[in-house]
Structures are given as C-alpha cells and as structure tokens.
Length: 502
Image (cartoon, rainbow, N blue to C red; front, side):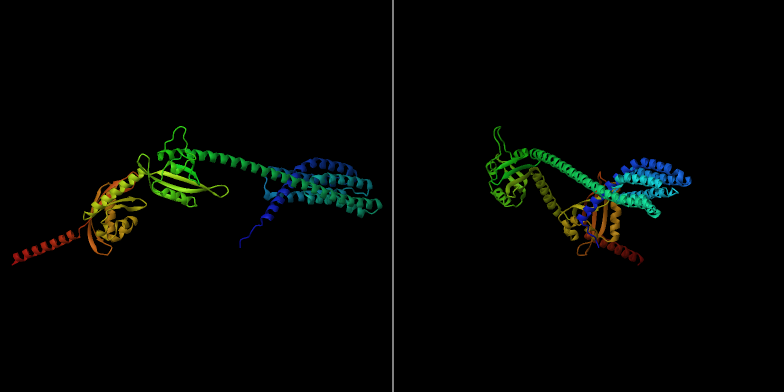
C-alpha cells in the first residue's frame, strides 16, 4: 500500500533537522576554545593533589583525560573536513553527547585522586570541577543533554564522595554540589532556549531573505520574459512569413504585418495608415463569405479555409490558406479576431498541374492492355508502389489505390516459388542498375490463375534506395497458345514417325 506523506509534518521535520544541524555546528565551533583551558585546569588540579596522591594514579588520570580531549579534537577535525550532510547530523550529535559524557566522568573521577580526607584538598578539587562545569556549560548548552551529561559526570562523583565522607563540612559541600547541579541545569535550560530561539529567528530571516530573493529573481525573469516576448511578438508580426492581422469586434484593424499588405496587394501612401479602418472597406467581400467567417469567429468559433480565392483590385486572382481565431480581453470578454493567412497561389498551380498529369496518366493507362507502375525499395521498409495505372483491377482484381496503400498486398498474388524468383531477379537487377524480364504465374483476387510478363528497369538513388519503372502484361492467352502449338508440333512429329515406320 502506498503511504502518503503529511506535508505539514514533513515541513516541521525539515525545520527541526535544520535547527539541530545549526546546534551541532555551534557546539563543534565552540568546543576547541575550551580544550586548552580545560587541559590547563587538569594540570593545575594534578599539581594541587600531587603531594597527597599516588603519582601513577595522577599521571594515569592526566593521560586518560588528555586522551578524551585528543579524541574530541580528532572528531572536531573530521566534522569540519567532511561535507555538511543533513543525514549525518544525528551521528555528529551522538558523538558530541558521548564525548561530553565521557569527558565529564573523567573529570569527576579526579575526586578519587587524593588519599586523605583533607577538606581543603576536597574543596580545591570541588572548586576546579565547578569551574570546569561552568566553563563547559555555555558551549554545550546548544545540546542540553550533552551539557547535562558533562555536569552530572563531572560533579556527581564529588557530591557522592562528600556525602559518604560524613562530617558537617562534607555534607554541606555535597548540598552545595547538588545546588550547583540544579543551578547548572537551570542555566543550561535558559541558555538552550535562547540559542534555540536565536536559531529559529536566523532560519526565519534566512528563509524570508531567500523567499524575497527568489521572488525578486522571479520578478526579474518575468519582466525579462515579458520584454523578450513583446519584442519577439513585434518582430514576428512585422516579419512574419505569413500574413497576420488583428481586428477588434467591429472588424477594424488593430495590427498587421508587412506581408499582409504585400500578399493582398494593399498599397498605402506615406500619410495613410490601415489601423482603425474596416477589413471590408480595404478589401471588399464580393461573396459575403468572409463576413460569415468573421461573425462565427466573434461567437467564439475557429474558422479556416484551405483554398480561398481572393480577387485583387487589379483583377488578379490569388489563392490563400487562412485561419481566424477569437482573442479575449483580460476580463474574459471577446476582444476581436486574429487572422493568419498564407499565399498558396503557386502551390495551387503546381497541384493543379500534378492533378492534370495524373488524370492524363490514368487516361493513357486505361488505353493499354497492361499496367504501368512505379515503386521504391528501401533497405528497412522493403518495396512499396508509388504509382499504378488505373486499370490494375483488370489484371489482378485489386484497385490501384489498394495496392499503393497496402504495401504487402501484391505479395498475395504470387506463390512462394514465384516470389523467390521475383526476389532473386530484382536483387540482381538492383545490384547493377539493370532490368528484369520475367514471366510469372499469378492468382488474382478471385484466385484465377494467370500468366503475366513483368518488365522493369532499376535506378539506384543517392540514399541507397532503388526506384523501379515497370510494365506488367497479361500473357495468359499467349502462354496458352504456346502450349497448344507445342502439343500440335508433338502430334505432327509423332504422325511423321508413324508414317515412316509404316
């Protein structure tokens, strides 16, 4: 089952991770500042208890405490040498908590160094421990549990030792230690709240600045895009390859391109403008067709025409392809019509000439007994007809249009053996740009067997394809006559043999 993510909880979690990352960063930034003072206090403590302690114990304690600070220094260096990763924040937080707790315990074990019950020495040790705790709390308050772990590890052994020592002064020192721990906890809480509040304010300010920067960048991008779009639109309207014009609801010009004037043969004097004039005033609509198109477009419909004859003022007829689309005001009300137009007069003449040529070929092809064809072979696409004369149905039962549209349809006319012969002959002719001359057996659409003679010439093109020009003729009657003639010759030969034998 797909789990859904609550965007509010996800956002809150992301903020808390950022806050924790900032706390960890501050804790690691402050940590090196207390390393040297702490080591100096440890040496001062060692000197103070040296005369009343076993020297090996003192040296061992110094080495162990120094090792703690060395490990913390290495951890600090690794933290600053690795890239910031939100996923590793929890790991570095655990490192700081563990290091603070262990270091605090090592400081707390210093109460075990003096062998006697000298209250002055114990007070000296307690004073040093209080100073170390007070000095560590500001730097560790970013992570309150790390600060509490250090204070408890540092002061609690002294408190327990004083409480177990008996005597009024020892009990008083124990009570003072408990009070000191409480004061430190309150200090840690207050400092953490301030740090937390400051970090949240910093993140809020950074987020606001980032949002303002993003909005400003978006505004600049939007303004630049608007300026560029406006310039492009003006350039497009002025230099558009197709004629473009914009009209209001009264069919009066609002904008037009230079191509619009040249295509429609509109000539303007130096002091004459087209803006504000009606479309029908400039280009009279003789048929009323354009008036209907404008009316339908102003109702919200899109109008188009692929072949529209326009009679210019000089009597010359030009053909256009055009499209009308409605445009709207910002309020959503109809603003008018945009018309796109393209002069297709030359294409119209070319298409008319091609159609006339096709009709001529169809008429000529209908007068010959066979069929003329043209086809193209490509390496991946195979063979496909591009032209077949109109009388194809008389030979194979399929219309020319069917054979052109379905490129594999002609293969149904031949059996496998005949197709192989056709493939081999075509491949040999294509390789040398030669010709083929084949007589094949064909089955038409009604499965009637016929014999056809195929003559075709291959022309290799620059792209590697082969263009075929050919003629196919039904020779079934000729083939049958050849068979009958062969039989007749055989019978004549056999008659001659029998006469000679007699």
